[in-house]
Length: 166
Image (tube, rainbow, N blue to C red):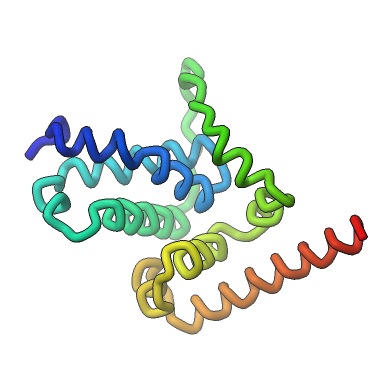
């Protein structure tokens, strides 16, 4: 199959908002989220004939997103200058409400990217520590410590907010 396969186009049309929200939670940046979704969908589209037969094509795309993020953490960052600014990003009011609710956005954004990924995989994707370690290319102990530290930071931030508003 080709990337312009009608079933792939249908999949993308139906699942794009959810995939974008997932990428926003991982990256905490609209532009990085758009890039992450685009790269994961490009990879998926090239393998669509095999992916569409899987139990969960969306799970395949989400796993691709996590692997792309893990690879980015391992590589040094390089910024590329462009001659013209990119087109404006699409607005997702549902996502904005979720991330603005009770300061969730700022608390999650303060977490290191790898810690965010561990928490998303564990609590949103409901993955085991072994799966997370495999996806992120680290040890099970590292997953546990990242999750523990991330949750501790979120709890501390919530307590601080309750004291401020109490």
